[in-house]
Length: 263
Ligand SMILES: [Zn+2]
Image (cartoon, rainbow, N blue to C red; front, side):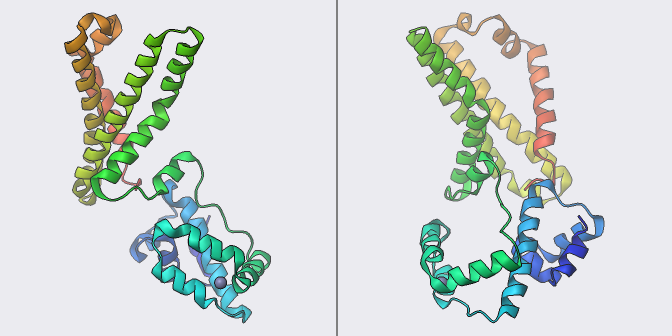
């Protein structure tokens, strides 16, 4: 997509589109100049183009603006989204504008796709708590299938050992994901300092996650003895080769996670 052309066809200035997309004007003009939009922002840009077209069409339509909606939007918090949704469903002025937009601009493009984006767009509080929650949810989304498999095995084989293992895995996923999230939060200043800092933050985040995993495994070994870990696990956590593999793999994942394009 030629972003610059699309924006001008929509009749919007850089400032107007940047405002809708939620980025700075310099960032947006960089995207227009290089033709590269970060993948994580593509849906948002699409929505922004739709929104500037909607604004232009509505301004020309002569339809009255809804003052009640403007007031609601100005006074409500993000968590009151239902109040606004209720208004949009019942207000005659808003419904008329909505119909007009559908006919003259087209339907609103979806901003979110998938469970992860939904999770990440929820209001989970602020600061390190938010980061820890999102980290835990992220790791749960990736490893939760293991918990489900253990649970179903506990049912099929009527063996409560698997129930314990499922619980243990769940706690491990939440704890390690949360730790990764906290490190990600603590290393935010690094990400603001440039590309190298962004990669470093990614690596430290993965190491924070792995550190929590290893600490948990170590705790289990300490309490129940090394025998419970099994041969493969012992090779990974109790040998130098295992540590080297883990550190190198962790760094590689960290580089992917720390890619400066990501938010
Ligand atoms: Zn209204």
